[in-house]
Image 1 (cartoon, rainbow, N blue to C red):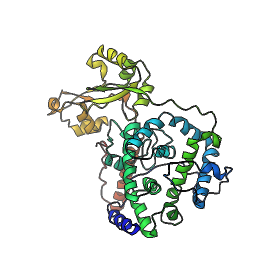
Image 2 (cartoon, rainbow, N blue to C red; image 1 turned 45 degrees about the vertical axis):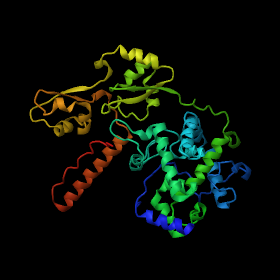
Image 3 (cartoon, rainbow, N blue to C red; image 1 turned 180 degrees about the vertical axis):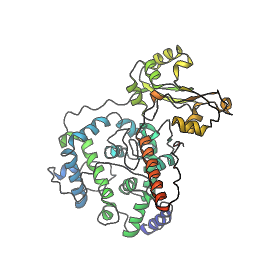
Image 4 (spheres, one colour; image 1 turned 60 degrees about the vertical axis):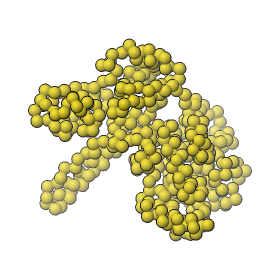
Amino acid sequence: MFLLRLIILQTILFCFAFPVHAYELTREASIEDNISSTFSDERLMGDLGGISDYASNELALEAVQKNVSLFSGKIKDRFSLYLIRSGKYIEMMKKILRENDVPEEIVFLPLIESGFNPNAYSHARAAGYWQFISATAKRYGLKIDWWKDERRDPVKSTVAAANYLKDLYGMFGSWNLAMAAYNAGEGKIMRAISKTRSDDYWSIVKTEHIKNETKNYVPKFIAASLIANSPEDFGFDDLDYHSPLKYDKITITSPLDIEVIAECSGVSVREIKELNPELRRWCTPPDVSEYTLRIPEGTKNTFLRNLEDLGDEERFTVDIYTVKKGDTFNTISKKTGVPVEVIYDLNDMEKIIPLTAGGKIYLPPKGKITLDQEDRALAKKASYKQKKAVSQSKKSGKPAKKVSKKKSNKN
């Protein structure tokens, strides 16, 4: 059976040359770290629903013990915050996992991925609760563009994570290996299995065929899960968990400013942003025929009543640009810093094409745009490419070609 699985995995390996998932967790400890433990083996034998076979493995117990000591010692304050945040999402995420035939115990994975922070962002540009990189996110149906990043949505990203993990389990036949692949990428785990001729995670951990980060990933998950299931047993007393996420859903057919949504709902802008963390800009996406947003539970009637009193011009804020002679969408983009696709999204193309001097087009309002981590990462990448091009041109004696900035991350 193992040989058959190995042959299948070797065949699939050619399709996965690079990792498709990345995460960033503070690496205070690896499997080799010498951290003393004060916890008995009995407390390390919690019930994880059979998704991790570690109880009789000395190496596994040692690794789990070290991570329990890390979470309950050196970074206890930070881990307490992660646990407190988890209260908002745990039950909702468990339900989604169950509905997608994934063990609900996997719900604790975001503790080591993001600390249940929707705005978590890694050096590898992984984002959201489940720390998807864009390629994997798009593969599992999440949309990422200038207006929204669904990796930050607690419901959509959990559905995607459940489907991804289920596929990994189908590929490897083990939740330990599925989680290892979630961390390192399918290709790396396939290669490790091929080289070690073993499909046991704990056996592979003893080799040099996976990185320390991946060797420690499952022990970290186990340790985090044990603490989350019985926090008092590990010294986490009187945690004031966030209340479970509750909201009303509203489907709108034209874009709205977040400030307008908050005003009509009678709550703060912060509350609306917390309920809709996928929104990256000052408004809901204008490039869709309808959009479903979340507002605080019990505010739906108030929202609809107040929205009805507002005129169209009060609902959605834009700047108006007057087209100059010789303007093109590219020149307007360069002058204003607004990506061409965003200009397209904001305007009825039938009304503004062809561009004529004196014509009016809509642009994002200058005072309402703030750069997020993805924007800054893209700008840094473009700057690096430009500097590299200039450096190479100096060496070759040829003028450098200007590196164009990525207009948007449209999916």
